[in-house]
Each structure stands twice: as C-alpha cells, then as structure tokens.
Image (cartoon, helix red, strand yellow):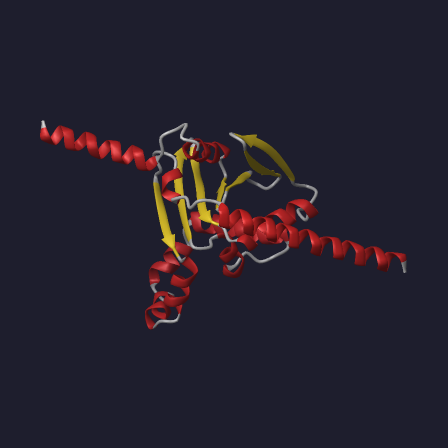
Length: 226
C-alpha cells in the first residue's frame, strides 16, 4: 500500500514538474527575440544543408507520385551500401537501443521544429553541427530527461557554463556529443568547440560564416574593380 502511495506521489510530482517546465519554456519561447540560424554558423564549413518546415516538405513529397518513384531509384541503394551510410545506420540503431526508444520523424519533429541547418567541418576529423529551432515540447523532453535521470547510469552528463550559456556534454556513448540552447535555438555537435564557436558568434566575440563570406565577396569585388 505504501509502495502504491509512493508511486502516486512520484507520478504527481512528475506531472507538476512537466507542467512547470512547459509553462516556463513557453514564456521563454515567446519572449526570446528571433535569431537567424545562419548568423551563428561557425566559419569554414565543408558544407551545410538548410531546410525550413522540413517535416511538411517530407510529408508533401512522400504523398506524391514523385516521392514514391524516388524510393525506387538505384542511387538510393548505392548510398545505402556506402560505408558512411552504414556507420550512420549503426549509430542510429545503437542510440535507439541505449535510449530505449525509436529515433523517427515523430521524435525529430519536436527538435527540428520549423528550421534547421546541418553543417559539416573537417577539424582533424569530420564533425557536425546541427542548429535548429526547437519546439517547446522538445525542450521540455530534454529537461525532463535531465531531471529524472532517464539516461543509463553508464552515461554521464557534464554540465559547464560557457559565456553564461549552459552546455551539456554526454559522455559514455561511442562518441561524445554536446548540446546547448540559445533561447529557441538548439545546438548539437560531436565537437564541443563548434558549440562554443556558435555561442561566441552569438555573443559577438567571433566572426561567423555569414560575415566571413560577405568579407570574401567584398574583397573579390574590390580586386575586380582595381
């Protein structure tokens, strides 16, 4: 009987906690000024992909005849047989096993809300940085996971403050990754330095990719006019 009562108390406290987190993040979400994702992209990416309303685009394509034919293209089989694709598939399967859940579009929708940029960098090894608009429900899920310590005890969350913004590095997976939030914007990378670079650009301590490219274009224009 006592166990049942304690279970009810824990459930009630969890519901209250999630309600408070939802209210807090909603207020923060509405009060934080809009930030252009590209403006905090660090310099010199190997390449990047930018997409808006990604889930709507995928849904629209899947429902068309073009989308159905796209799945049968031979090039898709070539991509899937690539070692890099197999490694990514393995990492996804490992993540799902360790986190006890599926990493599908319904999950990603909360974390890649309206706009996202996925960039790649060659800094000794190939690294990535995902910058995305995160919905309120996505931030609540992350915070609830941190508070309730849902992640397996084999993994450790290392919390640090960088330029007054909290960064969290998850240690214990085959590869470490770091994430942070700047208002509505979520940052995720397998290189903590990329997260710090994005924060420095946001704090106007470093020049980002946009200003770098703008400077290069101006330089080319000046040389062309001289």
